[in-house]
Amino acid sequence: MITFLLTHGLQYAGYGLEAGLFAFLLWRGGWKRELALWLYVSSLLTVDFGLRWWVLSRYGERSHIYYYFYYVSDALLTLGAFGLVCSFFRRVLAKEERLWAICRLTLPLVFCLTLALSSIALFWHYKDLFTRFVFSFQQSLYFACLVLNTLLYIVIQQVDSADEEVGLLVCGLGIQLAGTAAGYALISMTRNTNLAIRQLLNYISPLCFVGMLLIWFCAVARPPRAATSCALDKKQRFPAPA
Image 1 (cartoon, helix red, strand yellow):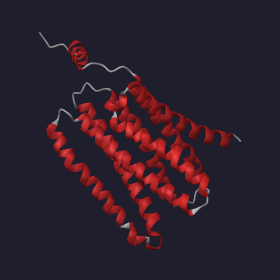
Image 2 (cartoon, helix red, strand yellow):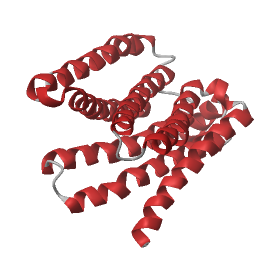
Image 3 (cartoon, one colour):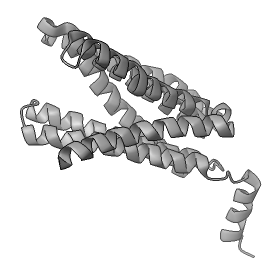
Image 4 (tube, helix red, strand yellow):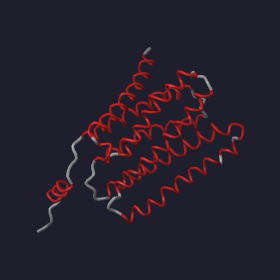
């Protein structure tokens, strides 16, 4: 009973936060400034609360259609997360054109490399090409997003930027990516045969997802600080020697 309540409690908490964040950005007009974030939250809400529920109610949990749709939609959401990380890079490096020029070439290269590595799975698991390719592609892309998001957080600490909001957005996404990537790593190490780990993952991923949405709420709800005030604070904290 406790397991049932905890599992469904985290699930519906995620649905509620998705809808709340979507509505908050729409109500405050923040979707224009946070277009990439709003589009990603919209895709989460559409897939989780709309399309998956419709397919599940129409075809059933054990149907092949729901099975394929679940993994394909999960891979599409992972692509959305990759695009969100790229938008964060552009936002952080808005005033660093030299660094952005490097990232503009590196990010597509990372995606192509991930796609190439996933395609190798087609030769290793030729009996189940579609699902194996989708799972391998999603797993590799998640790890790529996690590495890029970690590098982005390091870049934020080095770049002089008045945009404090993006730091919280990157931290929130990092929590979700780290939790899911850890789950994929455990599944690969145990070959998905350890029942205790599979039950543990039922809580880790939804908990990280709820944590991400809560941090995003804090990021978009806090009043923005002006760049002039940030510069004034830095001058006051680090006065020039006489």
